[in-house]
Amino acid sequence: MDRIALIFDFDDTLAPDSTSSFLESLGIDTKDFWKNKVEELLKDDWDPIPAYLYKMVEESNAGKNITKEKLISYGKKIQFHDGVKRFFSHIKTTFEKKYPEISIEYYLISSGIGEIIRNSEIAKNFTHIWASDFAYGPNGEITFPKKIVSFTDKTRYLFQVSKGIIGDKAFANPFDVNKKVSDEKLRIPFSNMIFTGDGYTDIPCFSMIRKNGGIPFGVYDKAHRDKFGRAWGFIEEGRVSNLHSANFKKGSDLCNSIEMALESICQKIHLKKSMYQG
Image (tube, rainbow, N blue to C red; front, side, top):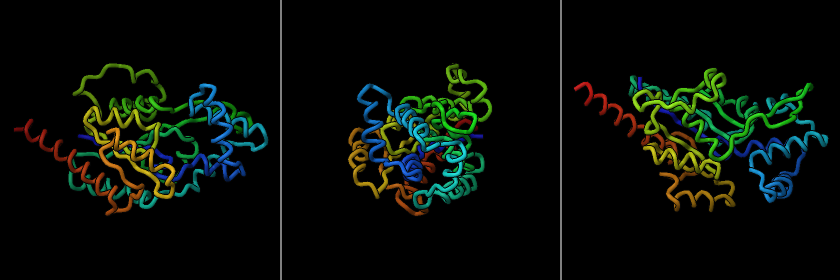
């Protein structure tokens, strides 16, 4: 069976920034957190992702007591962009009914907090979720970044999707991603991938997907005009094929564009099979 992978970022792509909203739920001034505390580390040559995770550990130790239980609980409360919760079943049902020889799979690659994302309402739709994670102390408190998913780290997981290093296999064999696999043995070729993201950490994935025949989509949250310039920059630099507001409702420009991209990939797969069988 042929497979198509729809791969997503999370924060500001499928939902408003879950890390900031979680910190706000604890009474933390997020403007001060990002602009001063995290920015302070960036000026000292820290990578942005471990910088914010480290500052969260500091906030926890300073009295906010950030625990695994709190992260899980908050994940269940996440609010999503319009249409997100129905998008996955709509796409899968529509295309697998029309093309029964093709399977639609969903993946999520995020620099956000895995414990929040994996406990969100939509997590069940994804074959695999990769995100940043914490190690926990004896009382469940966060103690240290356990996994960091930053800029080019995200492309590693595109290769895992392509080579089928997912599920328990991904945890047990972290170095398998480096093994050479011939094109004909790839579980999902890059040309059968659609990647949707919104931010600077997604740029390596945009570039890799586009370079290898897949389709990258850029989205922006229309409620945050301060991020519009960044989103338009993806178009100007040729990073993405299309740019839309993060509205996943059936009939929206974004949903229609993703459906057209899927139709194109399905047609190519169908044509290739017909030529081979002929």
